[in-house]
Image (cartoon, rainbow, N blue to C red; front, side, top):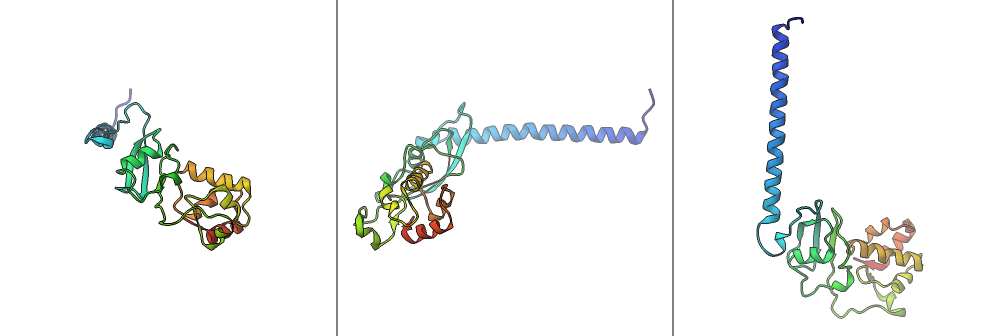
Length: 194
């Protein structure tokens, strides 16, 4: 077996030391992550003590609109829009919960928008729909069909998309719905409000 030179020994020792440091840092990092995760999910009372142990992870959602404490919350995977609204302190008195699908499952990065009820506003019917923009959070399929370029299938797709995402905060989000092109988006912008 050939003898190693002094410089080779130094290089091998430096590599071994670097690997030890990286390994120690990785192990310490995992322990810190576990302890901070336990502190986030195990402390406090009420809705903040939701446990994600064994659930396969968590999702982060932004709850905004007519809720008591709007903000970004960590929720267990499999949570529903209703859980996120409760975590945000519940609906504000002016909330229009009927406009969102409380049973929709949360997705990571989702924004849950709880719309406010507009005083004195009821669903637009017939010719009255032309008077002003329709609320995107409460629009019915019939109201959407009154917009140029929207038929029954697209209206149903818009409502399904809205329900699946727990509401919509902008008309621009509708460009993700199949069948809605640039011309339809312009019609929607003119006739809908968030």
